Structure formats: structure tokens, C-alpha cells
Length: 410
Image 1 (cartoon, rainbow, N blue to C red):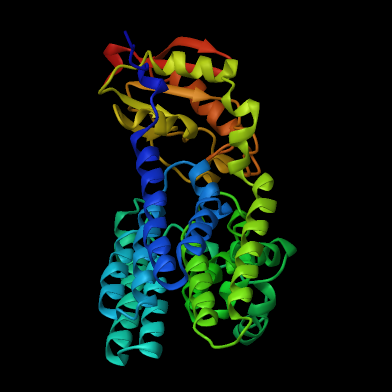
Image 2 (image 1 turned 120 degrees about the horizontal axis):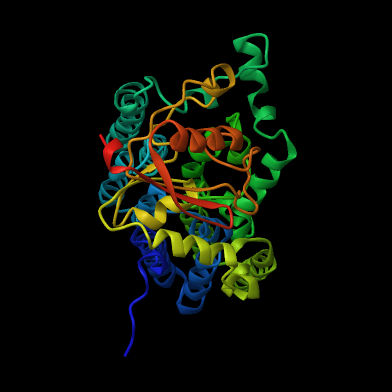
């Protein structure tokens, strides 16, 4: 008889939902390619999207709400390609509910509509996108932030230039320095063999690329995480748009040009595979359960359903489907506070604490941990036991499981 997986072994539902959302986005792209280019080109487009590094990087990371935007953009791009501007706006309007910067993407789509279709609809859409992002950044998100203000406002605030005029003049160069920025810009359009740059649809990629390249946060510049997921439908849609214009010409070499372009797309996709997360599927280590993972699963299984838990960053997704979870430490505080006053640590209120002192492999943050330096996390773990009534239930391979004594519970 088949035995169900233990609780900690089950894939978190948000991760499964993210995979479904990323996969759904291929449907409108392939359907549009089938209509405009034929069956085999549609297969190439589907493969190019499915194996694109931006989608693989997002799927290899934890769940992120940007996955909701990927199919919305994909359906909107198909509608734009078929000159159905009203449905395109309808598909893209919910983007403003996904992430605060996607209002700028909606504004870019509005500019495209004003250029290629009904001008009034385009202008209203662009204005709505700009207004939505402004309201979210200036009003809504600060209202939900206990510390006040927009949490990511400092990412673009640092200015090393002497004047506003100098900052504006040097912005194009700053968007390409250091070299990793230029490399990422090339890699973004590489799944289309750079052909998407010939399509006006590429304008939809400008807002996301602009804030990333001008950010002061280094990992916004590279190819890791979820940051490029919303760009992949735009790139593949730009490829379809470029190829359909070639297919529609009377030039005798047009069909050969389309075939050569699709072969190049496949070749580039295959060449890039080993450098990005999808290649891990073919690696033995991916399917090997390490002793550290076994220890984590064993301790996570000891936490009962419905409990309140303060967990290390990588444990949070394993618990959210069955527990009330906060990121360890139990209440977010400014990490800089630890540098000035190590006695003002927050009092944990969760019934359980599970902490991993080992940083995940290939973790990009300088400290190796998030959101606080390792020494601060260790100090707060010690304070939980020495000052706040937590007792150690188990400890294995650097993972500590604590439980609050009954008499100390709030």
C-alpha cells in the first residue's frame, strides 16, 4: 500500500502553483506562433520559452508573486500581436496587483497601444499604470510597513554623482557598469537570438530592465532568482513578432531566413542550458538527499500542524502550508540595530523556533544568511534560551529546534 509522504517531504503548494503558472504562459505564445508561423515554429517557440534561463532561474528559487505576472503578460502579448488591444489591456491590468513596479510595465504596454492602436486607450492605460505604481510605492506599501516608508526606496537612492544633471547624463553608462549588467542585458534577449530587439514589443521589457540596472543591489544585476521571469514572455513574443513580419514579405529568401532564425534560437537555447539551473536536473547531486536535508526533514516533522514557528529563511516554505510562520527572528528588526546595541534583541513570541546555522550553498548574500548577519542570528538564538524561556528539543547537523516552555507562553 502506498504510504503518503511525511509532512516535511511534501512539495510546498506555492512552489507547485508557481510551476503551473510558469507553464501556463507557454499556451498563448505557442498558439500565436502556430497561427502566424506554423506548427514547427510553434514547437520551437514553446521549447525556447520552456528551456529559457529566466524561467529556469525562477523555478529553481522559492515561490515569488511575480509568477502570477508571467501568464498575464503572455496572454496580453498574444492579444497585442493579434491587434486585439482591448483584451490586451484587460489581461495586463491585473499586473498592478502583483508587484509595485509592474505598473510601469502596464504603462509601457499603454505606450505601445497608443502607438499601434487606439490612442486614447493607450494613453489612459499608460497613465493608469504610472498612477498605480505611484500610489503603491508612496502610499500603500508604506502603510503596511511597520518601520514606515517604502522598504526598497533606498535601492535607487544612493547617488555618487555631484548633481542631478550629471546623474541623468551618466545614467546610460551606469546601467552598463559593472560588466555584469551588460552581460545580463545580452542574456535576456539571447533566447530569441537577439531578434526580439527588432520588435516594438521589446519596449515592455524596458521598465524591469531599467530599475534592475539602476539599482544599488548587486544581485538585481545578474541572472539569478526570479527577476527575469517576466522578461521571457516579452522576449519570445518579440521573436514571434519579428519572424511573422519576415514570413509576410514577398522576398524569396524570407522562408529560409525564418528557418535559419529558428535553428539559431534552438542552438542558443541548448548552448545556454549547462550554465543555468535546468541543467541540475541531469546532475546526480540533485537527486541525492544529503544528511543535512535528512536532519532538516526529521526536525521539521516534529513541529505539529497549526503551531506558530519562527524559522530560518530556507525552512519557511516548508512550513507555511500547515503552520503560522514568521521569519527568524520572530519579529523583523533593522539589522543595523545589532551593530549599535546588541542588547536590544526582539523577544520571540512563536511557540517553536527552528534555526539553521549553515548558509545555503551558492547563497549570494555577502553574509551567507538572510536577513541578518550570522552572528546576530546566533545571539538571538542564545537569547531565546537564556532569557525568554525556550528549551532545546533537538539539535542535528547545525539545525536547532527550540520550544517555548508552557509557563513562558504569552
